[in-house]
Length: 150
Image 1 (cartoon, helix red, strand yellow):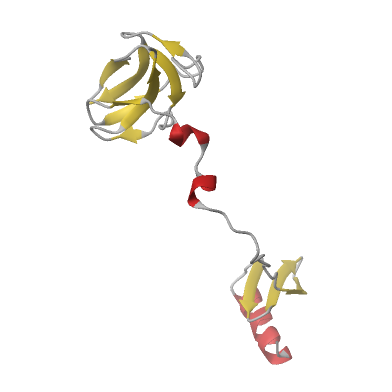
Image 2 (spheres, helix red, strand yellow):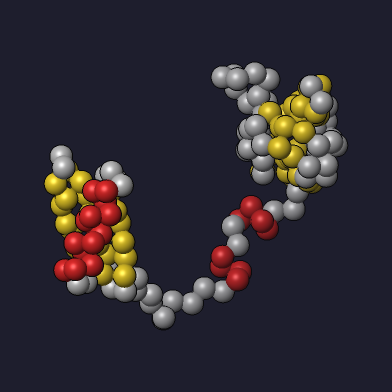
């Protein structure tokens, strides 16, 4: 990078009362920092990513184990905000690995200032909870996956 260009950038940094300017141009990364009225120059070579071409992963190897499990997908009956615990700071209704019975509370969906308790529709083991606490959910969005007991 040219000295003139670095000097101009340092002036811009000072004039605009900036504390840091980070610029990447080609293979060069330039970092200008203001330190007590002085401009400090740090020129860093840009990181180079290396990829190994020999590694081959098939689609079957990429699948997580959970995706191969057949489970009942319990869906949200309404649009709203999902809460996985009865109140902030308390234990969640369910977690992955828990056994649930039909009618057990699995979460709450708040819609239009109404808190609706969502109950398990099947007996079984909770294998996935694809929503986060406080997340907005759509009608028909999966709330919990339950592997039914035989």
